[in-house]
Image 1 (cartoon, rainbow, N blue to C red):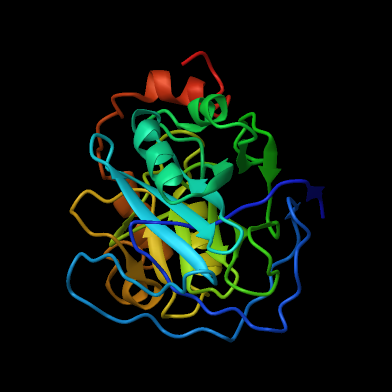
Image 2 (cartoon, rainbow, N blue to C red):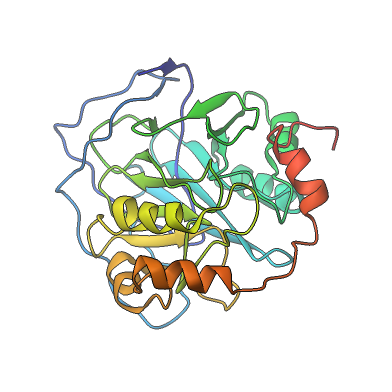
Length: 298
């Protein structure tokens, strides 16, 4: 596994409180490790609620800070995660148009952004990674090595992005390759498997389209069933998009109620073949820009 000098942290429109164990091993300062993830048994199932909420489960000075942010034009969710002790942060799927908002929040929370990671090469918006690198000193870009995109860090199955001091706890994102929407799609799972950032692979009661950008319905179906549906049932699903105002789901919910992925493989392939979706408005400018991970002249 690779070893890269950097540090991360978590934050989102949902503030989380996560206890770390006293036996946790510590990561040296400013070190980002890539290694096979280790699950923790020290977690609690999420509290169920029917309202759009910003949950609060965070110890000041210990644990993980989490924020879920929304961009309305492309209905994209951006996720900020940070360690509350070291203040190091990682940002998932930033959008170019909301970089000012994200930087303001990072500054207000006293965080230090170390990595901006994209779950895949987006076709409906330009990533904010390039502008974040320009505006914030030391920020690194990350994306799947199978995406065909340029980035400072290329991730693959089994790699882990660690932030904060503890290796065996929630403060890491383990990479699961989940191709199908694109070849470079990946799902990022917290170390204790209570949260999964699924990109466009698995949406709330839906999934990413498979009719362009190396799309393959069979691959997507296999990815979801083998890499996401095998997570604990209470694991929270945080997708890259939602078009109906929903903020999260769970593995158990999607296994029971997803109208596409509860079907057989053959039925799923037929459903995806007949969606007849319109071409994304920004695809001709977004994909070329995102292939350089937003590091173009913005």
